Length: 245
Image 1: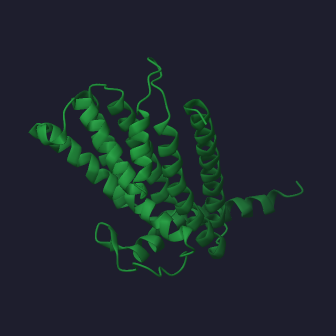
Image 2: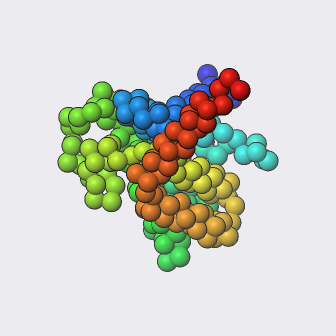
């Protein structure tokens, strides 16, 4: 199968996963408003799984993309083969980040300047904090570990939190924000491999990530959840009062 066909198929997969994510997000909001605890739990698990799949399908699509202006590939066949051979999704991403930086700076990491190393380390940290946990959770869930983590329950995957803690604390708001961070992240990687001036783009990216991460950290989900429930109840009461008028 040639590059164009592979890109077409991976793109279609990615689009379908994106649509599924938004549909389940809508279902989750409805289950929260209607106080359906079972559906809320199930839809939250589905969202975690779909976001992890969204991350994977984006990577597969990206590997075969062409630059929108030059129509040159971002990755040659040898690089694609190497990335796909790495196996673990987080290892693939970390290699792509390194490859993108070395390509953008036209030198190996060993020769990065202090500023370049700071930027690279910031991006790796952002990946580790906001994207890698979902990849690792999705891998657990792909093996049926939706309630109990059988292997690696005490494994730390995010800010000192264990796998099971993260599985049970992700919610509508945190997952929606993680997707926003992922979109900002993938936009930056595209610019890196496009050889755009990353020093000009970085401050804007970093500020966006900081803003989104602060929003995640300060989320009061219980308060927000009660607001959704109260709003739904008022809406239902209004419908009852005005029914038949």
